Image (cartoon, rainbow, N blue to C red):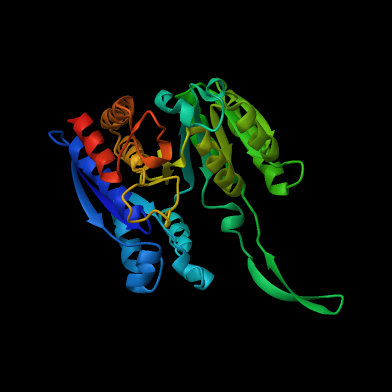
Length: 361
């Protein structure tokens, strides 16, 4: 079996962490019946520098042709003055739309070895294993109309910004089914997060989730307002199994959940379409403040590569080997700066990659 992976290192620490993930993918497939063909492209600020656009046509063609995409991160302060359509983040929105990546899976799992790295007490987070399913192509991020315009208020000329949040039943149902299918393989609990007491989109969201739930009688469905969900993630996170929510809420809650695990540098993600293609990236950003210093944590990207094998290539066996290797490395007390305590051995980005590869072999 031969599969093509488009590698988009992106900006900041992106090239450093994707390089380690590629090494791990090469190591885990050695001697297997899976052959990987890596093709590199540009996205984000790197794409703007090279081609004048954060998501150039060549990258779009390569993404649609690939079996999966491995992405580092995008963004940097040097691009903040660009017009909004040319900013690096528009590259992410563009590739999600082009590939139809409507389902974002973000696990928030605490490795036992990192219990002391969490900002919460160990007894609150020990054994944490949450999956956040975020709708990725709808809501306020993509809704039209949007923009900044000039209006007159009491005779005064003012600028106002406006965005539109909307969802249709099909968009809600398909993300709901992703969440329920995931729950069937876990602890059979889905919490749908919305703001139905204020937003009409959330009223429809809740109605459709209740309808989808009838097809999964074994799964317990609950509903929670997003403000309460944010509080409960800190108060009692282990009450959750699968959380499903819309784009904006999911963006915020998944970053909040990341800190329960000790560091956002530990959290992978997968964005999937209905054809089996996926884009895999760490949940963190480009971290320009540490770019080039060799201290970034590559584990989130390495674990994203494991998700790539599991969800796009159907190779859960190889994914488990990577996840076990990461656990073994943590058992050895090896830590990058973001998860390091006085008792640990601090290692560089490359050294962490070396350790995972060694554990695999």
